Image (cartoon, rainbow, N blue to C red; front, side, top):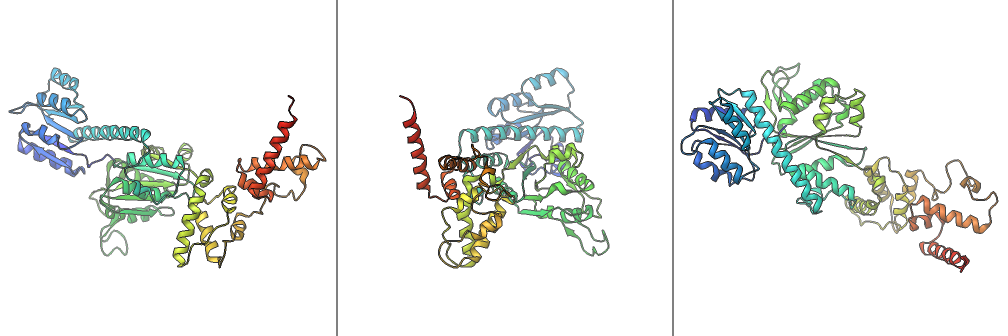
Length: 474
């Protein structure tokens, strides 16, 4: 759906034509409509807005439409102008297009043609605005709506890029697809998008997994009295509740095909029918959807409608899993410790310094949600002193050292040592190198696995470097 909140100016010297056009566009969902009979007022009105779409009659007193078109393109080049005229003149149409008009419509106006032209003009404005915003975000890491994204705890560069992208598209009314593994916080991103958009209405979230076609329609679109057995009174759906706000549909990849068709029609036309009604209602909600499925792959396998996928993926983000954001672990650990302690009315416990290292070596299949559950469980068990790592290690299914693969016991040869029976010196060097390799160069984590302090490991590394320097030929 296009952004129907953009200003729409209707300029014609005939009052009855203006009334008909206003009724047409109001019925199509456009909200900011201005009608102007005196063409001399147009430039002043345009100076009060940053961008707009103008539907302009060609033959008018005082200032004709062609002269006004040139003035608009000169002073407001971002404004989209559509010429509507009774003169079916090819030469004039060509001249208007040369001056920058985006379309030339001949009276009597075909309603669908004019609506389509205006919608294309709005889409072009939205695209231009998004490109401008993205350019600005690429050059400046500052967000205009930092508070909207504050609930998402991160210092990860990729996450910040997602923030900038969502802020750039927040002002449009177009749908957004949020993809990511279970537990990555997709609803938090949807809420942040809603806050950054400045929309006046509510944020309404609904999990659509498991909803059959009728339940989906009733939940979202509502019903009229007598629509089905037990429908004794009419009920508005969640889409009406989300008017001028955001409707968030989670687990969109689980929708049945018949239900996908209903969603596609809503996104294409902006209209929906309450159950039992033959009168369409106009949606004023922004649609944001989320899934932990790969919709592109499912669409190719015909497990998800391709037309719906392409309608959704115009604005899409992929949330990285927690395992790809190790720098966020200390922040998230502290955040959840504070949150858990506040929930239980007690001071936040101090975590052992090696805990973050162990967490960094864990894959976190449940992502941020799993980490939160771990922390809350540990705080519930905590009594005094330093927070115990026992519950964390239990949930990770780990012993303190990952150097030995599962089932290898304590057979050092399973580590593929460089010699069948290595010397103690070779074995020590190999174990240090292996620990650093598995920890990605994290000396604190490697030292923990080796049963050393970080300072102890650093001394060994310095000694090895010194020995190697001493053995080099002069």
